[in-house]
Length: 118
Image (cartoon, rainbow, N blue to C red; front, side, top):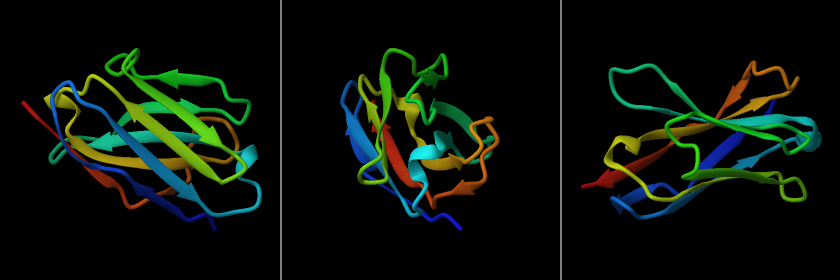
C-alpha cells in the first residue's frame, strides 16, 4: 500500500508560478516511476508529466517548456514546478505511482486544486 499526499496548490494569476509537492510512503519509492495528472469538471483526467526511477522525464505537449517534474528519493518526494501558468492550467492536480515503470499508474493521491486567474 502506498499513500500519496499532494500539496502546494492555490490561486495564482496568469503568468505566475506554483510548485506542487507529492509526499509518498513506502520504502521502495526510489524504484517507482511517478506521474502528475490533472482533471477539470466534466473532462477526463489528463496526463501532465512523468519521471522514471532513473530520472528521465516526459511531458505533455501542453506543458512542455513550462512545467518541470523532479524527485527527491531521500525524502520520498516528487515535485511539479509550474511556470508561465495559463488559465487553461486550472485543474485538480494528482500525483500517482507507476511501480513497474511501465506507464501503468496504480496509486493516486487526493489531489490539490490549482486555479489560474486571467
